[in-house]
Amino acid sequence: MSSLILREVPVDSPVHRLWAGTKMIAAFAISVLLMFIPSWSTLGICVAFLVAVWFTARLPLGTLPRFPWWFWAGLLLGGLLNVPMGGSAVLRYLNIAALGLILLSTSFLIAWTTSLGDIAPALAKLGTPLRRLGWTRKGVRHTVPVDEWAVVVALTLRGLPLLLEEMRILRAARKLRPRDGMLSRAAENPLADILTAALAVSTRRAGELGEAITARGGTGELAAYPSNPGRRDIFALAIVAAVGAAAIVIDIL
Image (cartoon, rainbow, N blue to C red; front, side):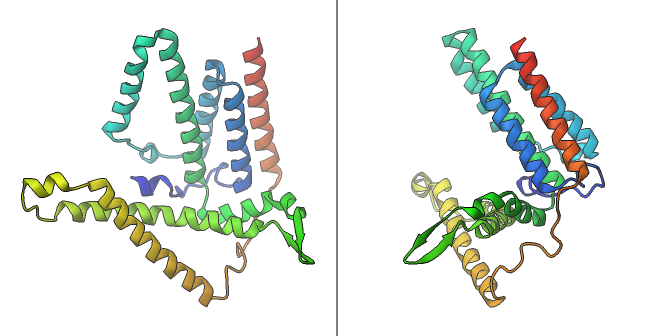
């Protein structure tokens, strides 16, 4: 399931055709809005907006992730721990939990409607103002490595599903390992074993990836066909700004 969360759903919709940078700007705007105005009215408006984006993107219901039972059990346990502190503490906890779920849903919508190959070029273009910043050392002018940062983010996003899949395989293989007795079971630390194996696998894959990039002469162009924002992106950002303004006005009133 974890690897499917980060995969684009191939559906032709207005949301899919938006520039990747537009979606990241919209997600950042929603995050800032909820950071400064985390009221219930703002949360409700953001939920309604995300539901509208969901239907506009024409995503099937099967795309929704099915979280394990321990996720919901943890949320319920957190609410129960706040009960002795009073109803206000429980409401505050529910407010924070809803805020986190909204931000998580926003990230999922970007992943479901955006190709991973479009992330790095969009980040590089959004970071264009940073290219003017720099410093001089020993007579050599150094600039902010925007392209390198974009490549790192793109490789991280591409490597995360592989890492999750490796951890799933390691966990399944560990279950098949024979156990000698109760003493060996008591001395086991499943989490440490899986994390250590995952770290070793990640180091090996990172080395192989670095060698492959070096053999090809470096990262090269970020995209073979770079995309740019268009009129539909301006219209989408205007909608996001209108939703944010409406949330602020309703919260003030």
